Amino acid sequence: MSASKIVISSIWSKVGGKYALVVIGLWLLTAAASLVWTPYPLLDTDGFNVWASPSAAHPLGTDGTGADVLSWLMAGSRTNLLIAVLTVIVAAVIGLALVAAMVSRSGALASTSVVVVDALISIPTVLIALILTVPFGASAAVVVASCGCAYGLNLARILRPSAMLAARSAYVESALWSGASTVRVFFSHIVPNTLPVLCVQLSMSAGTSMLAEAGLTYLGVGVGAGVPSWGHSLSTSVKFISIYPMAVLWPGLIVTMVVVALNLFGDALRDALDPLTNPALREDS
Image 1 (tube, rainbow, N blue to C red):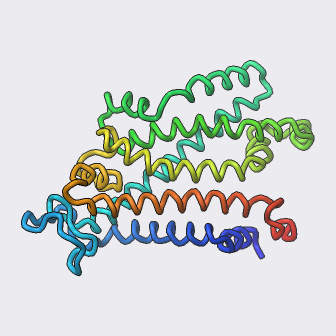
Image 2 (cartoon, rainbow, N blue to C red):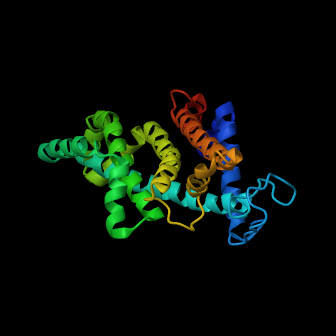
Image 3 (cartoon, rainbow, N blue to C red):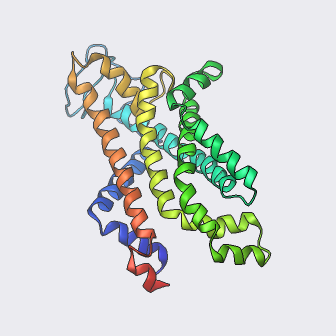
């Protein structure tokens, strides 16, 4: 059995892994389906049918403008998926670049990068978003940039101990003495040793970006007005929670389910990739 099949079967063997794969799979299918179909056009509103309860015509009801809630949530799944993927990419690039600097053979570069990370990690994500909103305005890009920077710094700090341990190991020393470049050694020997922790942190970053998008959009520095997202649905409906409490139920429930699924997926993937906790990988090798 190939390593990829072993990892997938290991994830599926856990209850949390099953839940994560099912929820993430439904999320991906919904995002793909919304590219070509939603029950109603997003701009289709009915002023005589506002805050309607769930029915056959509107399975999740309507909002304050009479728009179909299900259609907006389906379209919002694309935006949140894009934000999560891009946030993970930005965080991984920044985090791994800083880790490479912190485990560098140059003492000055390593110590300087540690000080820089410790200084910048105290800056809140909201403050970064506020600073970026001034020149660029509220947009999904601001959410990705602010979350990616904040999570990248946190990722570097968490990965540093395991990366430092690998960088000082005998096999890394042997690879360097044999003429391998530092870049090749970093990605071939150091990064694989941090993979379990890296997977957990990146999955947590994807999940936290969902919450950050909702919070930043509520503050007016996240996704722009008129752009469908789960955070946008939450921020617009929470104002009317005293009038129609069901308005916040559906986007809040979806965000909660996806965040939990992403965290459980990271935990299951960590265990599946670690030969110490997954004997099938040792047998396959």
